Length: 125
Image: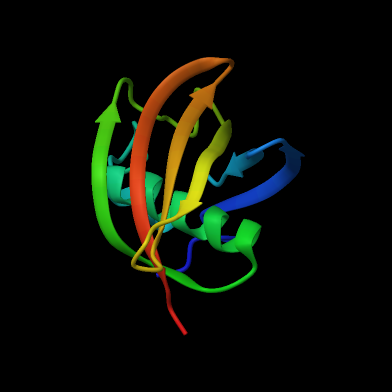
């Protein structure tokens, strides 16, 4: 399921050495939030991971799919009402010997880290 331009919108993209940051606007009115949870929307963990893959796809400019989520740590809930903007930092993006890619992702609101992930993805083509 593609979430971009429906569940979230990219407001800004900043690239530096070996790191790219995306500032996103979450759509608190999205159907997913109506179910998770009515009256107190919280971003599901699977959506946090899917957004990371979509942003990595945007950065590398070719379709990717998850092969493995090596590590995932949720440090705080992500509410689109309390924090409608969120920052994703993608770093340590590197090709592995088998051709797959690995990346580290930090999810932050107002400079506070709320999640960190280590992903292994593969070219979808």
